Image 1 (tube, rainbow, N blue to C red):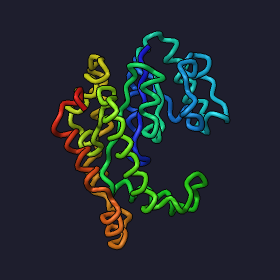
Image 2: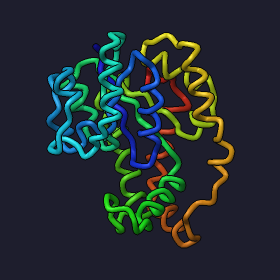
Image 3: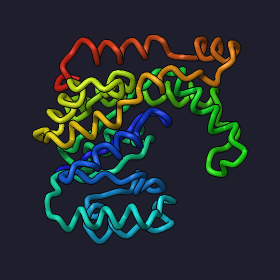
Image 4: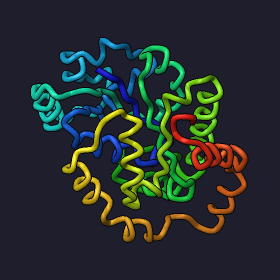
Length: 247
């Protein structure tokens, strides 16, 4: 069994990527399965009995229907890749690579403005109990900078071949080439039904991408002033200038 982890700044599409990949019968990705203990995970956490039986010490994502679907998938016997998505795995990429030799990490990269807007939406939602009010656009830029910093550090440490950067805006605009390249990274052959799943999932991109951002001009100015532009350019250069096998 191969291991795959999905990471990136919060609100960057990590959950959507996990849900997309879970449509493939060969892939099983937890949705923050080990949210509370990311530094402690070992291979034993991905054994069948451990993975399929969550508890409150490990995660607050305890949806029985989801885990029933996971159990059914496991029983089919087609699994080749197992893993987990937790945005802050970006802080642990060297640890993951050392603990799970030859594991792979998908790093989701999304433009800062929509990330910050999404932070605001959650922060301003009075009904949300899991997202603190102070986690607004100011928190977003801190986390966004940190995620790119950890990505660069992991690459500089020599783990780049295990990390695949997916540009959110390019991927979810429905470009099939992006999906094909992702499957090349996973060393899996694309199946026709999955192409249809991808097309269905990305068909509303124009509408979604044209929505107004929940950001004032003052907020935009703050983000521009606090964003690490040099770090962003470094990551974009890696993404655009090199093949993913070299990144």
